[in-house]
Image (cartoon, rainbow, N blue to C red; front, side, top):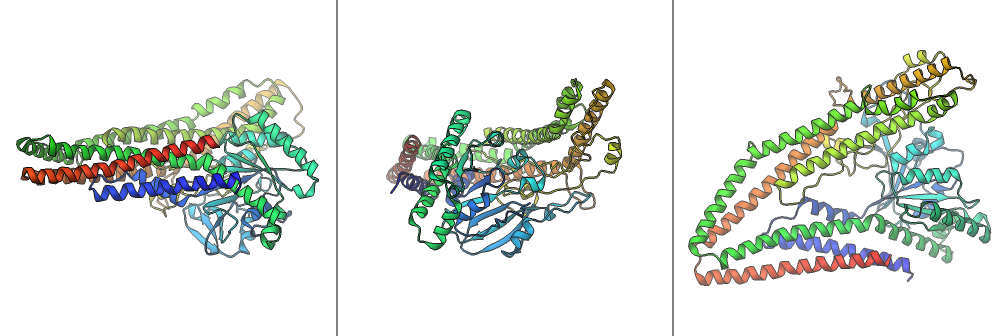
Length: 636
């Protein structure tokens, strides 16, 4: 057994032991009539059980990304025709039964056949002057099939062809890598990575440091050639990105040979290398994602365990250190507190209403701040108007025009994500002081994607084009697996909203022939760039804030905040109901203890001591698993 396989087994062992611990904590709490474990702990256990990882395969064109995916899954499922461009993302995962489907933004799906994958994957979005509804926007193509070569729970994402879509790498990276557990970046064996690779990796690092490098097509070169390239690639990674990457090793593979070996079963050496690669990938995933999942689950278990320990200590104290009269008084006090809690946190309770009002204020502030940032003269507008006013030459104007649209879009996306993250953190902060258990909110929004369909044209007729422009959509599929509509009544999936496509109303960039550097022309260029920034921000505002009256739908922003409001309401209701039930149970327990004589009290004391001892063994297991996890971290 090699070191990679050994580490993988150790990772799996600590994961299974943690799952067993969480079940034991839950069942023991139920047996001892202790407070129920938190919802966060239940979610942590479910995440460990499913053990799902999303890996996005990226890299420059003609690197054999799709062939590599076929090799890893051991089947030629995805098309590798060099003349065909895939415009949709494809998610490949292991399943007992073969299935192919189109997944849409509202969470719905349409079953298709294996032969339909290519047809739908290469299909271009039809232009439309109206924003399509989520049920008409394809998120991705899902392929499920028995794939013994693909580790269970691991999903591979084949990203769309950037050239076919006409989008820069940063757009694909922002869209797919943001919510991935890791990126599998494909390098070439023909020559060491160049500037385009360095720029690509730099852009990925803006989103995630978790990149696993594979060098493909090694069968086309001699061992000396490919090893020279591999070593050069690894040296470049170490010198340029070592302090920012989770992993810098480069794995050389021949996807074609791996696939042939898996299908024939005759090439044991190649099959062993494939197994080593999969083991290394599994180890990498545990390091960058699995470790955190186990650590968070253990911290939640420790938190819930400590709360229930306090309950046991209180019960024991009531029996051993309290007289009959004191116990009666304690029972009456507990009953009064329970009634007070229900009065304060019931449907019309004052504390509940105060908390809801505070939550609404936070959400309203978040909405206003985002709307203000998109307004003329707002933060985003000022950010881009300043460099436009500072332009001193037409060359500088040309350079700015080539990147301005991308930067405006990115700024809008980033501001939206900041508002969502800040609002959710503030909601958690407001709720936390009122409840003893850990309060958490799920990730409810992903990075929207503003698709710039064309570039700005500085011809004289540009104003005519703007006037006749419209809002054509060019939808891209997304990696995220739960649409935001899960919060507003749609089918529940497992991740946040995915798509925001927006076509610009002109052509960015300067046409050839603009060589004059006259001041009048420069002033005109400044004016047109400035106006187009405003036009683009107007389109962004429309996307986020416009509603469809005919369909009686909320805007994107209002969908998010309404979903957040409803979730916090449900969370408060769940927590208050649970706490009220636990309080009533403790009051009833105290009532039962009042008439007990000394002998009966002694029997109950012994029983509670046994309960406490049983409960402490769980804490011992938690500490042992934390130590095991720490050991694994240092081994790696």
